[in-house]
Length: 308
Length: 315
Image 1 (cartoon, helix red, strand yellow):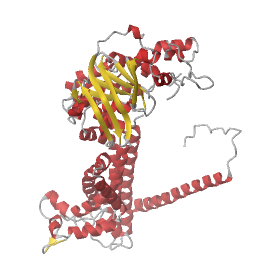
Image 2 (cartoon, rainbow over the protein chains, first blue to last red):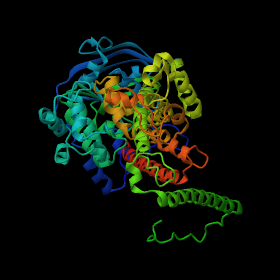
Image 3 (cartoon, rainbow over the protein chains, first blue to last red):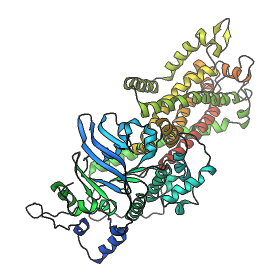
Image 4 (cartoon, helix red, strand yellow):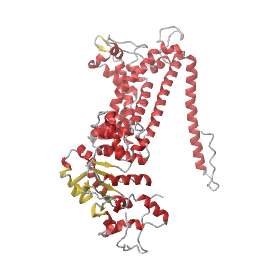
């Protein structure tokens, strides 16, 4: 059973009108009940009960202030303002084409790779406008993990060492980098599996291992903000769980923003959720509130699976 | 091919093939087999003829003047010529080709100039080599390039390894550019972005991520290009084939060879064919087998690098 891609839940009656949701509505409640099997599966899935998670003090790291992004004449993001905090996971959700990925990519100026893209408004990192930072320096602090695992065509060791070395240099040498590389791999929970094969080509790893290698690679740069663009959509449920656990742990030391199409995933790992629709920020709220008691009708319709 | 696998059972309810489908399949089969037969016939003919006349000592003796085919030596100088001229051509074509391919795929700016370069490369790909050879003759006989070949009474001879290698590199260049571009285009954009997202510059990304990823394509392009260079005759006859043995020009060791003249296997075959000036068909067949073996070896390398390329895949 593929839990990452559940069937859309439709709570519509015969006249396709919205059914009023109960106040304590919960996305997981809406899953079709198939008996103890599903309960068990869910129990292995949700890492730790949300309430049991350690409370982490939050610190504002980035601020998105009135940001609009245009591709030529098409406006992809409309005047969005959001805080990005260390100590919490911020999930951006919304239907395809709602601008959430564009917004995510603007946080480390990857949108600039698209010539037609134009950003107005301001994004700050610790109070400094990111437009004033060197893109390479910014991206070392605000790094990104992609939908498809994309290790570089080199050994596992070199993938992590690539980040630690100055631009294209081959120095410092292996021996000097080994502790740092192993630390990053351990951090991403991959070291135990690969420690005897650090010279194996990274592309021979399984999909889930590749994605964890990409996390290790990102962590080796000691970033302050980690951007995740649907990091689990190409992975199997088991690898998804491992990576979700990792994300929850990592939020204690860095700020995490995740774009996801998977509402269950957002519910499992996010502390705050921002719902975007047609480039606009419709609702921003703590995860529990947004899923169980959304203020906006559009949010309610989306989280109940009525569109998107 | 595998004899062990059981034949796939046809489902009983499968509709019968239409006549046109069966005719099409038959035609495709027939054409495929016909092509194999033609190919095999050429190879078998050449190998049978060649092996009959090929004596091992031909590989390490130079051509000699003689009255019958048993006394005219071998074609060591031609093998050396082929290898040297191919090496020169590749030393020029590989860096230029990779550079052009990287610029076209990764930068492509200014757009107008990129278009011009693109169509120029395509034009070279389609140009008959004899036209390039003619251009080479004019170019290397020009006074300012006279130092690259022998001179008599102040006039440049225009035939040398330099001249032939340079013009031959134009044959390999479009093939290398096309293969490397293909290899670079096959790398998904998110791989580039992953490198940028780690704070790496574009040039670092190209050097450490993209070119290593495209390495199998570089090898394929180089080898296919080498195959074209090895097989070319027109440029050799116009720009190298002044002599049947290596004749250096000047006294500086390496430079003297590069400025000197020689023949290659192709021009040797041309001269020794029944229509050529030497008319020693036995020598031509023997040289043809050696040439064929070289090209076959290159194809093996292409095949291996192609297999490497398929291994390298992102999901």
